Structures are given as C-alpha cells and as structure tokens.
Length: 115
Image (cartoon, rainbow, N blue to C red; front, side, top):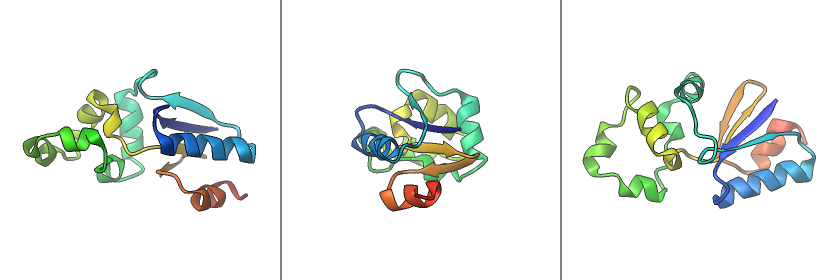
C-alpha cells in the first residue's frame, strides 16, 4: 500500500502525484487539511525518522512561528505542533511498503518504485 500525504495547494505534492500517476503507481492520496492527521499517524512517522526531518523550515508556517515557539520544538512537543499546524510538515510524506519518505524528487521516487 502506498499513501501520500500533503496538501492539494502544494506544488511539490502535485508534482509527486503527477509522477505517481504517470508511472502507473497505485496510491492513496490524503490531504491533511481535509483529513487531519491523528497523533498516532505522526507518532508512527517519528518511529521511522527524526522529528526535524518532518519540519518544513522553508514554509510560511515556520516563518510565522516566533523564535520562542521555534526553540520550544523538540521530540516531546512536535506531535502537538504538527497536529495544530499541519502545514508545518515537510511535504509530501510518502508511506510505501512500511518505509517513510519525506519530500519529492523524480530520481528518488524512481529508485523507491524501481521504475
């Protein structure tokens, strides 16, 4: 099962979805604004990667956080923060064969899917 998480307004998510469609890769799309993440989703991701990998430090959401809020982020607070502001999550998040992949590049997806 392949699930891709993101937001429909994200150009990178659209590129990843288009790549999957063009390659004929069956997948499930989950817009995290329309179908909000649960704490269990994020916790499962954190079991597979460092919390810093999930944070999009180039996002508007990141820039809107105060310095104090940014400094307060750590492994114990990130789940609550990502639930409150899902656009802080680096996108897309791809879950494929129980492996987690953050971000998109055609070369990386070709490697993941063996195309």
